[in-house]
Amino acid sequence: MAGKTESALPTEDAVHTEKALGTLPHEENPHLDKVLNRKFDLHILPWLFGIWLFSFIDRSNIGNARLAGLPEDLGIAGVGTQFNLALLVFYIPYILVDVPSNLLLKKFRAGVYLPSLITAWGLVCLCIGFVKSYAGLIVCRLLLGLFEGGILGGVIIYLAMFYKRHEMLYRSGLFYCAAPLSGAFGGLLAGALGNIEVGGYKRWPWIFFGRSLVCEHLETSTNISMMTVEGAATVVFGIVCFFFMPDTPAASRFLTDEERDWALKRMMIDASGSTALETVDEERFDWYWVWMAIKSPQMWFCAGVWFFLLVPLYSFSLFLPSIVSGMGYTSTTAQLFTVPPNMAGFVVVILTAHFSDKVRNRGGFIAAGTVVGIAGYVMLLVSDQNAVKYAGTFLIAMGVFQASPMLMGWVANNLASHYVRAVGVGIVISIANCSAFIGTFIYLQRDAPKYALGHSISLGALVITLFLTGLQVSYLSWENGKRDKGERDVRLVEGNVHRLGHRHPAFRYTL
Image (tube, rainbow, N blue to C red; front, side, top):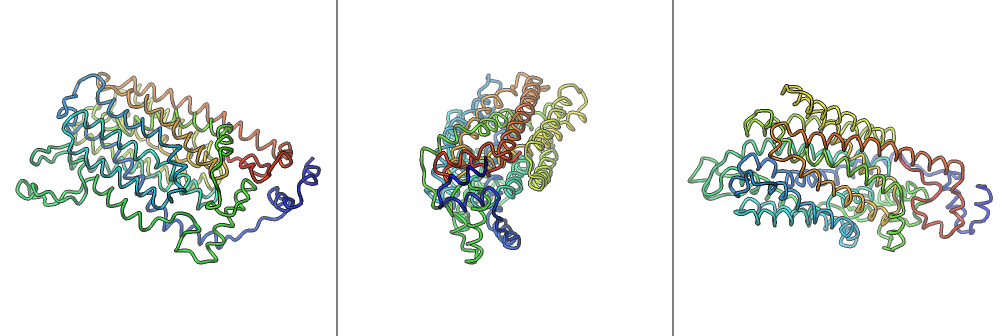
């Protein structure tokens, strides 16, 4: 069957198709690959790490501010679910902007667009410290979600422009490990800053004010002459990113001509026939790619898996200080006790990302992580001993945090070409982030200190995550088997072979 398919192809596509199907040898250059990866790692990953670090700190520090008096000062302490609503509104614009933001990434140049978003949300975060009313808090949270909404999808697509499919997960892990690190760093900062009382700003506002922001009141009210907090640091970091983040491999000034040529060529080879274009700059938007993304089963599987995974991830990130406080620790001690579990998650993210790329597998790591997280929630639910419950928070951090970058790599690996990936990643993140409507309302003040409802829902979400992960692995294995047997080769004569994207018979899904 494969022979008939190839003989029916137009002459100009024959060599390309033979090479894509593996009948001609793929060109390799391991030395240049190492050089390129090293340069990209040095010139790209530090900025992405910083972006995600500040992103997670700036969105989740409201959980630390809760213990430092924010509800009391804004008049919402013990008032129904108003605090939970303030958490929730962040996700409304955050969800809505994902797909359009991904489509704008290349149009407005990634090296300019992403830093613009960072700078804007840093300004908003800085303003939260000056909020004097509940309405003001809601407005700031909405604006924060608007500017942060395009970051995650944008970073995933940005990485896919520079790294081959099975080099990308490790890099995703290296930037995403900033999420648990932000929990640790945010807890340390909040523990220190949440005790400052200067002028009309006492305790929680200092969690939001700007790093390296000189406050004239400090010189007369305290011995501290300069405050280091979060909002202004984000603004400064965003401005610096403007000058150092490259837009695409072709625009990377730190590469030699030979390295730049190979950077483009290796991405063509790695595409396995899913695109005929030599650079991402040549690709043009077409609604055909949107429809291809929507019709992709692997996209919907990833959306479902990520949706249920984010229920415990978001609730854990936002409410860990409250969970630890519920064990009987004071505000400052509870802030500091959030550091070790998050540091454990930080280490596990890096290790699992490294080994995932080595074995070229995502689903197995996600499944293992969910099992570990399930064990953690069981410990929180069934034990009355603080030591056991605190150990459970370590298992949750180690199991849940590592699975999210796995999903980033999984969805990006299995969608091609650029605009299919841009649309698919946007849709997946939009659907997944709808879990915030659950995650922000399952830890209610009335359930303190045990929070049995929140722990139970998170546990159930992880069980569903495990089930859906198994389904997706089964589907991808089945589809790869069809392609191995030549049962998808007929697609090569159905139309333009260069518009098959991930449907190309030579393209193999990552399990």
